[in-house]
Image 1 (cartoon, rainbow, N blue to C red):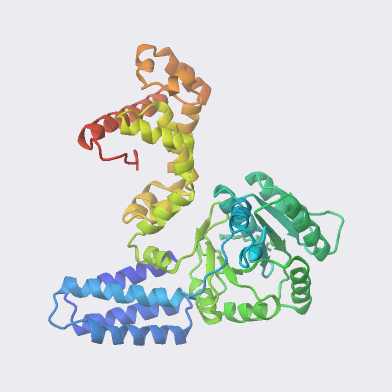
Image 2: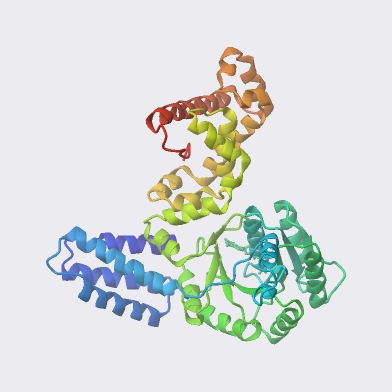
Length: 466
Ligand code: GDP
Ligand code: MG
């Protein structure tokens, strides 16, 4: 949807003086951009009327151009949010350990008995090729990174090779999985897998199901039976985001048989038809929970109407960035704590540098992070995701090749004994000059830490390198 974004930004920034003609053109441009990505025509008409109405009541003719532009941006922003917001909250998985604590703490009150200590079961449904199996692993990794104990069940016995695909994905991401090469009944496999992970006290169990090329009754019957058997906490429909207007009938057909409560839209990278799926979702009043933005396991974005629209309009999304960093529990991480303490004291060792870089990689694909920071996505698109992340990985390899003594030092040890640099370079399989660059970077941060201490004496730590 990058194209839609640039069209919308173009429309907004074309307003200079804010006279009537300009504003009319802006509204027209926004509507045609939305129609071209296949947003439903009725929804676009409603959006246009709402925008016009708000302009009439909220914008004063005598206002200056820049003030008008700000107000216009806000009006368009709000209307776009309304377009993609279902106003429904999907269930959020909780860790079993937390839930059990709640039960104990409440001493058997009426409500407490309702708190189950059962695993959160997610069942994925959708047509063949929609991206269920890929999304299953993406989702599993997303929750694993957030500290959930999670398992994958392959209940696709329809397509040959389905179990192998899930298994390979799961192994790559280090996620426990369940499936069968011999059992042909998907209901039985789903049941057995869920039972196994339930007994092992998994927080979340994701059940991947089979699809068919078309919406057909045999598929719907299968979904109904599996659902009856495993009683999912949450059923998510996985929908190919690039199918345009066809999304609506697909969503409706699945809604009848498997009453899903939320949606993952896949393939939102590259294709220009995402608007069709978005409006189908809007029509069924079902929240989109994630969007798939690529074939790699990290290409999954939490869908929040306001951050989605922020990104579309290129206005950055600091709130999401903060939530994202907090959700990774970095504060609980011992090494992170130590780094913060060191920084407060004006120190920044090589080990602190290593911690920082590791945390940075944990945050997920850099372009996702960059898109949350205003102006950053442009810079990133010039350098490129691959290049940036491979540079960071290289730095991590270099620091992994250092000894404990070296890591806990302020780096001067390398100046005193330069043969150490050669050894590290050999260990990391890189050039001496690359090690020198890491050392130089760390020296820079260390001197920043030292000066931050003098400047902010008593003001608490700040995140180095961010
Ligand atoms: P399933 O039949 O529903 O399980 O679909 P799969 O998970 O096997 O995916 C079908 C194809 O779509 C595979 O080639 C995936 O790599 C691809 N795919 C899935 N999600 C995305 C996405 O978000 N972006 C892109 N570009 N490709 C995707
Ligand atoms: Mg599949």
